[in-house]
Image 1: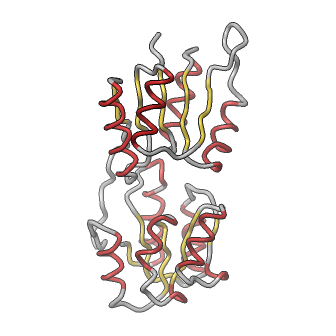
Image 2: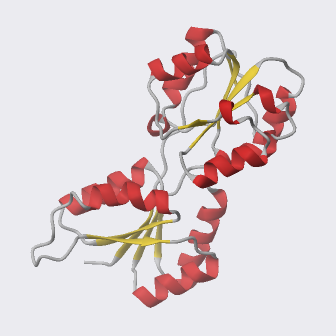
Length: 235
């Protein structure tokens, strides 16, 4: 059996780990943050041990640059690396792919399908373009793009921004750096139901819902429908 490592951080990565564990295949899961480790630990603690009492899933936490990834793959003797990072984590994917090539390790990318876009939505290639569009508008904005993109929207009036971020110190710090009022911060772990999306839009009188296409795993369809049901403009 080849030695496998999964760079996770998505629902697909956790699901792949579950499938391998159910099949009795030992593997390592790499996560970048303490929060990611907590989520994975909830799963691995529930997994059955291997036939010899050894855990089927081992965890490695910590951010690595390309060189560190290459050394990690070489030193641990991995033969297959699965990149199951977020679809928009382009830097992570670039580094993982390059490290795998340099280490001579088989590379596989686990991606989610793109979603059909509804008519009437405003579509942009980058968050910066979306922010530029929103600068010429009025009304509250629900930012469901994550903490990493928040700085791009910092040029907008802070009182308009209602960022939905993970409930971590990093998420709150990103909001504070963008001068978002504490009363506007929505710190929750998704994905979110249609009912909750609609409730947040109504509660905070949201005029614009900004999101990436996170696919089914990211609750994209629920956000699309919530915007349609409430009359919010989907960006």
